[in-house]
Image (cartoon, rainbow, N blue to C red):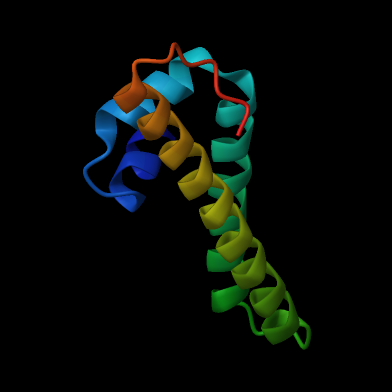
Amino acid sequence: MLELIKSRFGSRDVTIERAYSSSESFRALCGDYVECLTALAHWQESDSEHARLREAEYSELITQLTGEIETWLLAMESKAASGTEVEAEA
């Protein structure tokens, strides 16, 4: 899961690893993100009559979770730059 998150959020490996190892909330957020990616892939391949609706719902969730992860990482980077010890709950 961690490698997938790092691949999706650019060259922020150190920040991601630090957040992932130090925060249960961040790990849960990453888990939600991966679950949504998996569900989106399922609905994109589905021929179900509800597939397009579910695909749109999961796409929106991924957009929201991406924003939450970005916010978290920015907070971690900001605190690291200022020298503040981080136990982020962004």
